[in-house]
Length: 333
Ligand SMILES: C[S@@+](CC[C@H](N)C(=O)[O-])C[C@H]1O[C@@H](n2cnc3c(N)ncnc32)[C@H](O)[C@@H]1O
Image (cartoon, rainbow, N blue to C red; front, side, top):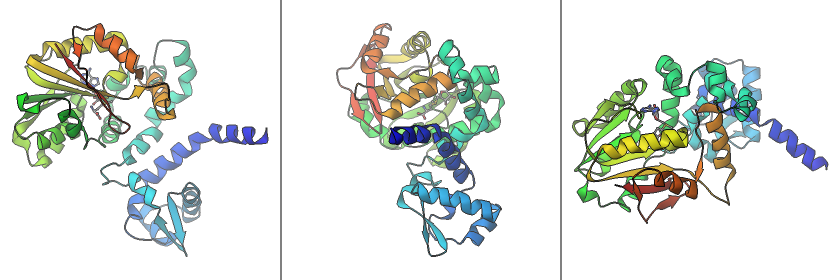
């Protein structure tokens, strides 16, 4: 019985870990300890923190196995690479966004979201998350940085499902900062890539395109999912888009995409898929969608198939699945 109580106390206290991780990332602690061990004095100097308080934060990071103490110096545990800025699989900005007040506060209104069909985000901010980002540069910045990791494997996975020789132009719809769009252009050298998103993503995306070294084949276009999409595309990629929306909105979005496909055009839907042997991560993201997004939810494979059935699109028999890259469904007209 005592161990159950202890476990429940731990669960209740999990919010502290979110903020500890967000704070350590905001202070760039893992970047500072990436290549060398540092003393408390050195870390204090670099972070401008109060040394006694910083040492308490470091003690917490030691207990959760992200930092080690060697003599009097601190250094990263290998796991901390995922919280460093330049790691290709970095979660640093996801940690920072998760602890940021605009993203964090809505969690206090989860009960309102459960009782209604509104997001908790709307209870706090009076608007939807994406409209909020149109006004708040900080929120847009934190959100787009958080979304910008872990795309390297996607083009290879797409190539297993589609004959890419037939694809001359790609639209990465809801492509945010362009990190995936650029990777697609880099791997599929004979294609032109458009990154479509709302205005708040434009400057991040243009910046990245400029630095990509292949800017001639990549453009940013301002697009609204729910308005007609200009142009005709051989491939439209929707990565982590449908889970932000209700079935009604997702159908509207897919139908808009269908109208923007070329004759043999295809849509690649990349999403987490809920399963019976579900891991806690997907269930928690499902709750996160209820908190942050208007009508957003994670779906099971059968939820996806019945959603696609309500559009005029057909689902390819082959799907790709990987725990990191999610599931990829290919839809055709
Ligand atoms: C969850 S993020 C996914 C970003 C990216 N595809 C990825 O895989 O990391 C959703 C994206 O959809 C964009 N978005 C939201 N509402 C939109 C709309 N009405 N029209 C176009 N883009 C929209 C957001 O700005 C954001 O970049």
